[in-house]
Amino acid sequence: MNSIDHDQQADHFISQVSEDSPILSVRNLSVHFPIKRGFIVQREVARVRAVDGISFDIYPGETLGLVGESGSGKTTVAKSVMQLTKADVGSVKFEGQELVGLSTPAMRPIRRKIGMVFQDPYGSLNPRMRAGDIIGEPLKVHNLVESRENYRSQIASLLSTVGLSSAMAERYPNEFSGGQRQRLGIARAIAAGPSMLILDEAVSALDVSIQAQVLNLLQDLQEQYSLAYLFIAHDLSVVRHISHRVAVMYLGRIVETASSSDMYENPLHPYTQALLSAIPTPNPVHERSRERIILRDDLPSPLDPPSGCRFHTRCPVATDLCSQTDPDLRVLASNQQAACLLAPGYSGAKGV
Ligand code: SF4
Image (cartoon, rainbow, N blue to C red; front, side):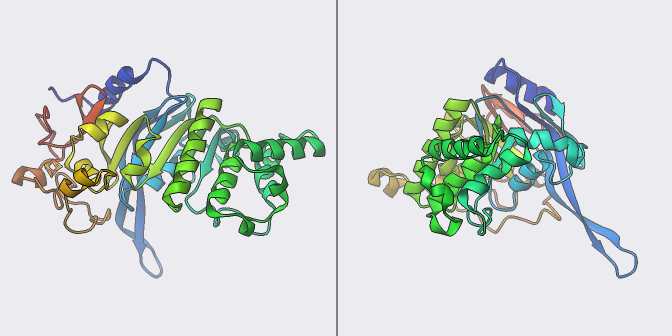
């Protein structure tokens, strides 16, 4: 395959997925954090390359799972979509509007349309506020309250939408279980009528059975309101059932993207293969014969990423070429891209 540039690859991938326009379109996004030293005059001595040139799209009503180890840059992507972290380079378009460079007041109407749900429902809910007021806060911030009666009925309706009773509006966060608190977080995220939710490790802290209930709720809400989700998790097993497509991140880069079924049935990148091999199977016969790919060492520092393929220091099939050549993301199959020199169909890798 001839080398084609990143935008062309992404466009090629897009055209296979949907004819609609993406609700969120991220292109060549890079976020680097400067490390400064010095007592009187501070000088930049290094840069943490938290996110390094990533591109992806999300369509209305679609879930993109963004997966990778802690430190891979997933949360920085979420923050830079919301402009809570400024991008060094790249573009973030939401419903066709460029967000990079927007001021805080200009971002306010956008924040109404993109809700966020965090990992720690307790930490993200004000313990001194009653549940009703926590959920109602976005209604007030975005001037969506017509009267006191209207405020109360909107809160009751939101509580019912997420499977909680209206009487719970009077309770404080510490009176809810972990799963109920996450339902409250979801109610708050959908209160202002968003078209997209960013779910950052939203079910990671919950027990498996509660996780399943919250994932079912998210799927119901997606169907009901045609919400798009950017679903961030460190565990591929969690994103499996909720995601239409999955993107795997490693050290600030996307190393593989595919439809959910292709990703799980035919992973092309060795990192994805290692993540998948770590998922236990419910079938005891398969579980006994499951071959686990153990990655050596920890995730390298994004301060000084390895040369060539960033994964080469841990890759079980790396060759000498891998430390010299930085593979770009290429379309290797219908609905599937990977950045690996040894992936089937990959050829003519770009030099560093
Ligand atoms: Fe492994 Fe080499 Fe492929 Fe990187 S390019 S994932 S080191 S085989």
